Amino acid sequence: MKLDTSLIHATWNNPKGISILSSIISMGAHLGVGIVGDGVETEEQSQLLKRLDCTEAQGPFFYGPMSGPGFVAQFGDRMTLAEWPQAVGQTSDLDAH
Image 1 (cartoon, rainbow, N blue to C red):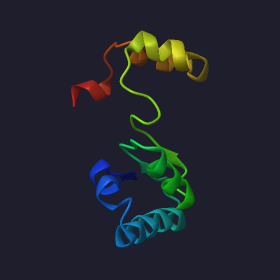
Image 2: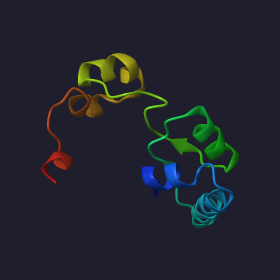
Image 3: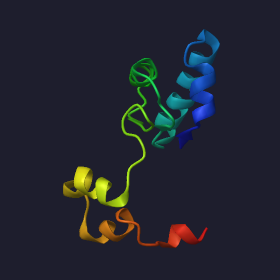
């Protein structure tokens, strides 16, 4: 399950918002569903998600946009051969939707 960028931005520095984030993350854990914090832009947002036991996050704080070849150069050692064509910009089934 993904915590939308707008939710993180609207709630990360608000006590009631933090309570909402905590509840969503806890619910996901109890259901066995992974939670991804999307759109993380700051160290503070990243640390808050860690404190709330959100184990995955993505956003410009970690890496900005990059080309397919740049992605492969940075992360290629972590991918299988089957994943490489999509990483370098070749189309996939997801691109059709």
